[in-house]
Image (cartoon, rainbow, N blue to C red; front, top):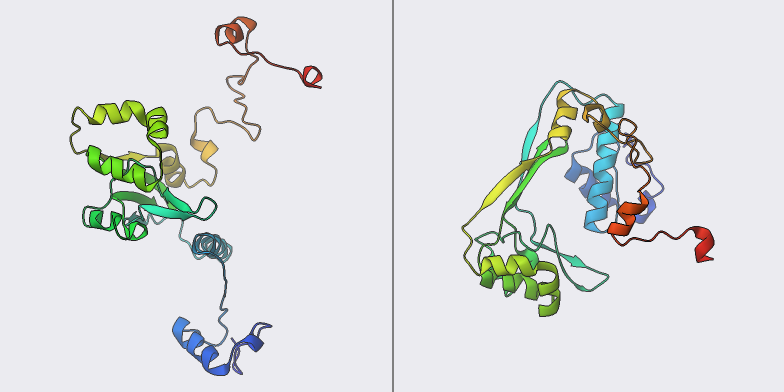
Length: 233
């Protein structure tokens, strides 16, 4: 933004009142750079987040000695899958809806929040948790919204559905990513620096010489037969 106004090849597509409104909306001053982006929400937010952090690193705007914690709540319960034209879980089908939004499952499921939460430290997710569904009727409703058939439910989650029939107490929890937390506390950018036996770029563990070739007896026991490329031609 210059003293004479905004300069960009995109300016010609905006009328002056709209440009003035945009400048006021973002609080831009002379010398500021305004980024405009257009894409589906999820792609747009992720892309701008990467850009924001890259610029902050490049301009040394982040104090590496500070520990900034943030709780993320009010996750959506579902997202819309454009490919299948149906609802899909934002997390998993066992995450409980927010108790205040259960009524939305019948009318507006995409507006329903989940009872899930993440703990973020300096931009990294270091812990994640949720309240699980413990009511059979509610679990059936979630499966119905996901358009799962009884056969699919039984095949994928039969053991879980059977357990629900015997009564499950309300339960929730939080799981920490300890290695990621240590990465932040030790001020390294590479998580492999804090893992005892890290794998390299080829997914090989040099300390354990893994993966190693499977013995013929092991393959026989597991009923696995490996075809060489010559055999498949």
